[in-house]
Amino acid sequence: MPVDRVYPDSVYFWHVEAVNSHDESNGFTDAHEFTYAVFVCGDASGDGNVNLLDILYLIDHLYGDPLGPAPDPEASGDVNADGDVNLLDVLQLIDHLYGEPPVSELTCP
Image 1 (cartoon, rainbow, N blue to C red):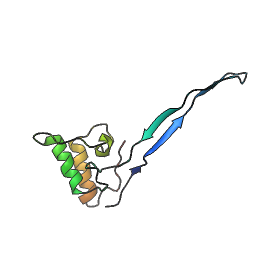
Image 2 (image 1 turned 180 degrees about the vertical axis):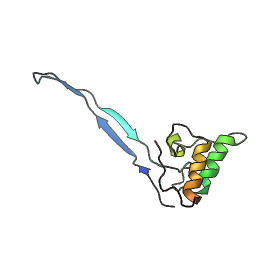
Image 3 (image 1 turned 135 degrees about the vertical axis):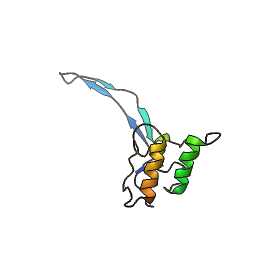
Image 4 (image 1 turned 180 degrees about the horizontal axis):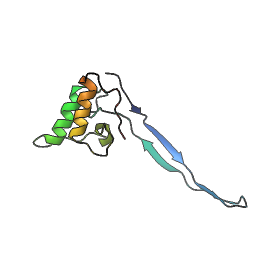
């Protein structure tokens, strides 16, 4: 199954500068760092593929006894982008992989 959405693992830095109406500046602030994590939307197991193992991983996470580990990052399992990892995400993955016609896009947050 081809990857639908990959998020780049990159570190970015930003600075802020305040400028008033007279074009006077207080200078830039120190650099602030933020990182985008790498994940494939639907790859709950973190193996780089979206397949049956991801469905089973989510089922184990939601209903296992004891509960299995959460997807890391959790957003990789939230394939319908509703803010929760739940049965609806499992059903979306099943439809994506095995539906007739298959759901063409997963939409992680």
